[in-house]
Amino acid sequence: MAQQPPPAGAAGPAGHPDGPEPPPELPERVVKIYGEHDLSTVPAFAGGFINFGYWAGLADIDGRPLTEADRVRSEEDLYRLVLGTFERPEGRTALEVGCGRGLGCALALREFALGSVIGLDAHPDQITRAREANAALLGGPAGRAGRLDFVLGAAERIPLPDDCVDLLYSVEAAQHFRDLAGFAREAARVLRAGGRLAVTTFFARSREAARVLPELLPPYADGLDVPHVVDEVAATLVAAGLRDVRVRPIGDGVWEPYDRYLAQQPEPRDRWARRYLTAYETGLLDYYVLTAGAG
Ligand SMILES: C[S@@+](CC[C@H](N)C(=O)[O-])C[C@H]1O[C@@H](n2cnc3c(N)ncnc32)[C@H](O)[C@@H]1O
Image 1 (cartoon, helix red, strand yellow):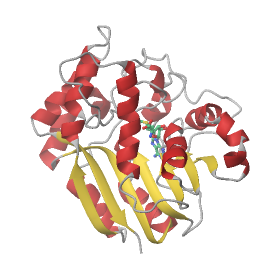
Image 2 (tube, rainbow, N blue to C red; image 1 turned 60 degrees about the vertical axis):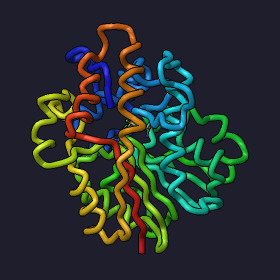
Image 3 (tube, helix red, strand yellow; image 1 turned 135 degrees about the vertical axis):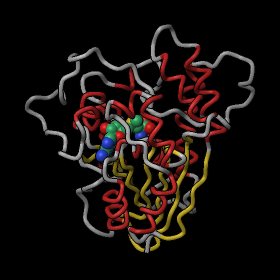
């Protein structure tokens, strides 16, 4: 994702000295960017979500300024796209990996009638924010019935038992995972037989692209993101025992409107962030939805 990098030395590690530590899987750069800096508050994002958004469902956005409401809708629609890959989600148990503020978990419960959702995030501050943002839901009937929970833990070492969820999804988090094979094994472990996985984020289109991307986009160079190659990600899911692995590029609904929204933001924030469109147009990266089945 695009971000305004904090001034050197300004962001410390996770903000609660007496609180839990981030798991060792979380690199220092990721700890900083989701720490006191609270990435969701930069103008490139809106509504508490932190993703580029899926804009194809927004009617009549060509040729007019994009509003903050459009931006929030695009971020919600990315969730709708991912959750919409699940057939008959009603009453199922789901795990979101890299849930951020947990607003996507709430959307999943509200709009997809899931039986329960666990939001997992490796950053303690994000888990705190998710609990705060969803306090009403957690304190209400859904929370009391155990339909929503937030858990601290890494994608590569999920602190849940085997065969405990029907659905596993992840929205714009896997670009941070150092050990994608570890995540794939953990996903296969926690999913019940017949379960489904859906992962969406941006990946490099080839090994050569992965080599070039850090020269263009600082988050790859500074250790925030990893330029995983999409075909290798798919192969990793297969190697973990997942089946029916499918890769769908969705960049035509992401990059151009997102870049237009960025262009409207006050200068001189995140000038380099507009290079994502260049990277897409020159065939270096794309945004994808990967789906797979378990068992
Ligand atoms: C770009 S944000 C996306 C948040 C949310 N999915 C959304 O779309 O608004 C990425 C999230 O992934 C979390 N994350 C990064 N690495 C992780 C890991 N290895 N395991 C679990 N969560 C991780 C971060 O703490 C952050 O909250």
